[in-house]
Image (tube, rainbow, N blue to C red; front, side):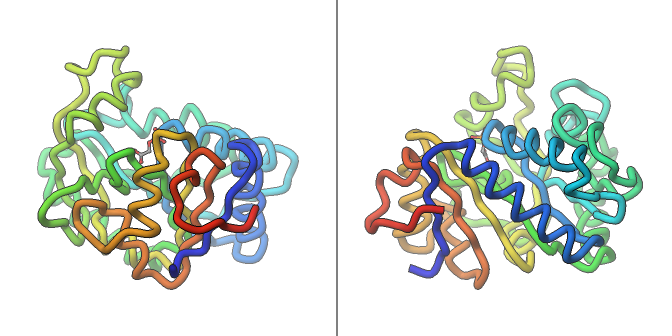
Length: 251
Ligand code: PGA
């Protein structure tokens, strides 16, 4: 067992601990380069981080962000885009320099070139200091879906039906409107971050968390590759930790 695991009594405690961690890292290194996730899980974290930032406890004016993924064919101004999710829940409420917000453009005319541009932008920023991750119930990280082969670098992915279903809320609850493809950082893009924090809450994540932590490395559970990384903190609530083989310390 190589991953550092903390189990919190609830999602609120987890979000508070992650907020403290990020605020502290920002104080130590104001030019922090952050990789950021979307989804339901990080909402409490973003809410708290906005709160701390308003109370002058987190200064984003010199920080840089790169989001993990974006839907293909969805422009940055469209309501279903992850860019709009981030604006709504985070960016519009903090003092980040907008030139340092980086996003994959889902509407790019040449998606492959867009992926290469993103890799180059991450490299030009000096690489990711901290990548924050959620995990899909199928074990995906970013949009790296379970498959026979995983892509190393930012690439175009085909979304699994369950993943499209999980994102239906962004498209008026209509799964048919969720794009079939997305752009996502690859496994190596994520694994090259200097530090990684993965958060998971709720019983529907218990099986993928167990496969990630206690299972073998397998492309069928992309998150299992995090076992290769020397600095990963897995933050769980009790429901998501339920299937772990061993007990882990509280956070
Ligand atoms: P969720 O998504 O936070 O909405 O469960 C996590 C993910 O798919 O990475």
